[in-house]
Image (cartoon, rainbow, N blue to C red; front, side, top):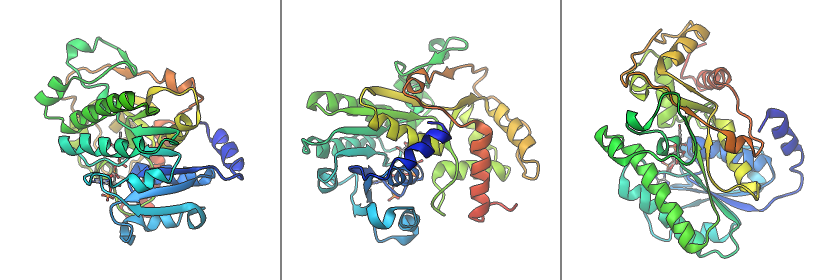
Length: 329
Ligand SMILES: NC(=O)c1ccc[n+]([C@@H]2O[C@H](COP(=O)([O-])OP(=O)(O)OC[C@H]3O[C@@H](n4cnc5c(N)ncnc54)[C@H](OP(=O)(O)O)[C@@H]3O)[C@@H](O)[C@H]2O)c1
């Protein structure tokens, strides 16, 4: 969604919308989703593991509309039935929480939420936060030069296993299990597949990926060397994309959510030039050889989505690191 469209949407949000559940509401991505949902007029029932932990949830209570339209309740992906009450009270669910790379927990956590969804016959739609890592990780032989990957592509579990990329395996198995369960049980499921998410942190506590970005501005090269060529997307676009696919009746299936794909070397060259006062390396090795894949975002653009560019997402991230005291000006 363009900035103007977002403002328009925000202005139109005088009328209160329905109640929706956001799982893992205090996370990096989910916090932005909660922010935008409140601005658009929704009642938000956020699930967190500890609603009393002010360090983790305090920033949510500062959001516009939170006092009037936000509730936080306790739920844990690893406890069967934990989401029943929250999901029962809502007409839509955004399942964003993720227990990390433990395979059983990733699959069963997602199925646990979907089993709660199955119990609510008036649920309109479930939006699952998956990842572009379920799409792009394959043998070179399956990635022809300059291939544009779309939503029909799935990562190879054998390839991920050979490189021990457990996160991608967990996300791929969890998403596949979600599709199977939704099909068997008549749940209207739509999945958003963000690439690497960059942008301002609403919470003063940094998520693992935001910590990686901060590291790059402090001269650490390990993480981004291993990331290789990657897609990048602004966190605000990820939030908007979730709402867009929730609200658009004709939205169906998977949606890649990406602004631009860059080699790690291209990224650091751009950032070192743009932020000369930080010890960003001027180049990074391409440990995977020549990678040339791109992502097609035609499907989500057709719904009206527009993406913020890479410069702006890193400008916003740096501004946020400065305001939280992680980086000096
Ligand atoms: N960040 C990215 O670049 C990126 C890219 C693509 C996809 N994604 C996906 O986006 C989603 C959010 O990621 P994020 O970057 O925002 O990560 P994050 O800040 O670490 O948030 C993860 C959330 O999951 C919750 N969680 C973990 N284990 C849980 C459990 N057992 N029960 C209930 N909640 C649990 C955490 O709750 P606590 O606060 O209690 O720990 C946290 O709120 C994930 O599904 C991730 O795979 C992220």
